[in-house]
Every structure is written in structure tokens, then in C-alpha cells.
Amino acid sequence: MSRAIKVIVVEDEPLAREGLVDYIQELDFLELVTCCEDAIQATEVLAKLPPDLIFLDIHMPKLSGIDFLKSMKNPPLVIMTTAYPSYALEGFELDVVDYLVKPFPFQRFLKAVNKAKGLIDLQSQAQQTTSDKQTHIFIPVEHQLEKVYFDDIIYLEAMENYIQFHNTDKKRLTKMTMIHAESILPESFVRIHKSYIINENHVTAIEANTIKMGDVKLPVSRKYKALVMKRLMP
Image (cartoon, rainbow, N blue to C red; front, side, top):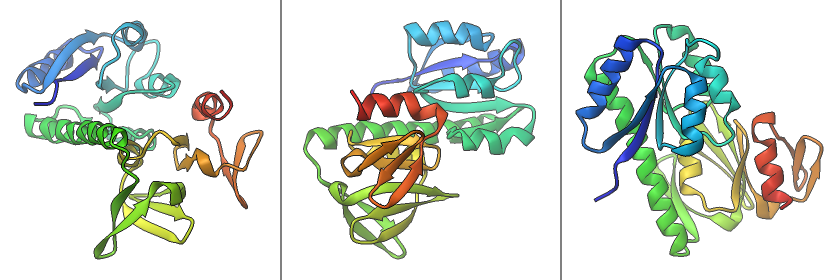
């Protein structure tokens, strides 16, 4: 049996916070670590008790949920909550798992949580298969599953709801999220931008805020630069 998913709620409205806690306590596979009233409090908690999943409100005093998420170098999975649906696009651009518009019923909450659970399960499977020296994955391409060797993947490019695998032999377009891709790839792959994951074994040069993969130059975003430099220049 898999371990419980550790959850933190970051919500400044008492009623909304209580409602989320009630929902979380309905599910045995969720373990509530703590609740925070704002992002400042959440920062202190994350330093001591990093969770698997955060329920993050957008409109909070001192620091918004969006800015808080942007400030994290290696955020856990995030489900955003807000009364304002207009922020959904920005939330998804930050790779959140889901976006819940308040007030939301338990069924909608459950759908979001199951998405997070699926990603966490994939991450666990990926860690296990990596330790077992798995060399490849199968990805859906058109009407079949194609075998792709990790060593042959140069980089991945996000294209709306799809990902383009740039391989040594050809490109492959598959319906997948970047979060899913990160969860199934081994340690030689590193996220450098919201739209790019690279295989560090194919890096040929580093120039300022770009990385060269052969003849291709890819941008490194500010959010990922410190991590990328640490990985590529230990």
C-alpha cells in the first residue's frame, strides 16, 4: 500500500480553510500536515515539513499565491483555489495540477486530488524503474505506443496539451503534460524552462541564458537557472 500524500493548505479565509480540511479528512490517502493563513507562514512550514501537495489560494495578504509559487525553486505539486476564474491560464502556465474555483463541490475536489495522486504514483513508479535500470519508455504516438530510449531523447518541448520529443532519430508528438514527463524521466533530465526539459547528456555548450543542444539553442528561464547551473556545473 502506498504512503499517504502529505498536504498543506494555504488559505486566508477561515470558512474556505475549514471546508478544505473537511474534504481532506474524507480521504484516507491524504494526510493534512498543517494549515497556513498566508504565504509567509507557508514559507516557514515548507522549510521544515516539505509536503507532497499544496492547496494554494491566490488572493492572500502580503504575498499572492501566484507570486509565492513563482518564488519556490522546487515546488511540490500545487492545486490552486480561488474565487476568480480569470487566473486559471496563469496558474496552468506555472504547471499547477488543477485549478478549483470557489465554492467547489466535493466531486470537483476529488477529481483534482486524483490527478495529483496519479502524478505522485507515476513519480514513485519512475523512481522504482530508474533504480531497476530501465532504459526506455513507451509513449502514445498517433494510434500506437512507440518505444523511446532515454539516451536518444535530446530534449522535450511543451506544445499546449502536447509534448514534442526531439530524439536523435526523429521527432515524436504525444499528448502529455510537462509534470507527467518529469515524473517518468530519469535523473539525467532537467527542466530549464516552462516549455523545455533537456537531457544533460546531449548538452554541447552553455551561453549566458541559453543552452546549446547541438545546433539548437534553448532558453533557460530565471525560475530554473540556479538549479540548472547546479546540475550542469556542480
